Length: 207
Image 1 (cartoon, rainbow, N blue to C red):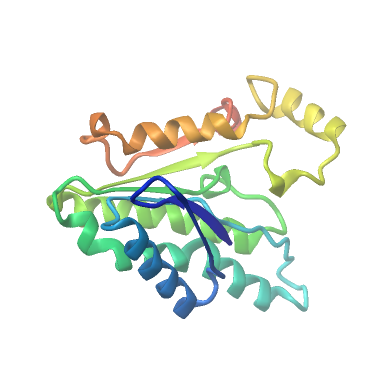
Image 2: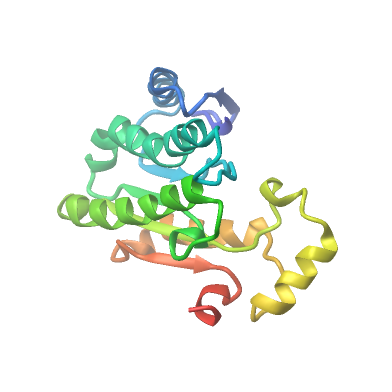
């Protein structure tokens, strides 16, 4: 995974890290702190999806890799930044999950379980870290035009949206970015433990 961050003088700092590698993740967090100073805002937006039927030979590998990147890496980076997040009582954590964290799709057990885990982690840490002033919230994107679904034919996307999404379209990444930014602002200081779908109404229609 690669992440561009802004250094103290406004220059871009790129840190590449395999989030499935615990030691590499720790090193990347240390490098980020060295370049940026204290980490007051932490957004978890990395993820992967490996379709894996439960009876598939490669299920165990898909499970281990998916949980490592989509869930365990979140806890690792939070622990690495915890002192910074707590230091002035205004730290912000935003975890990006998925509508799969609110429902389920066949043959996607590793991904679905990881996203349910992100929702649970968010709620638990909101309670645990609330007394220190740290907020922890979760965004659950639905059908968004990202690289993860580039292989889906456009006609199939249109058909899905017309059938399943009240707004009758896929969302754009900027629409997820806007709610992420909102949860990082000082104005969101009393919002914690929230799980917010950004899905054009998909989950409420199909509940």
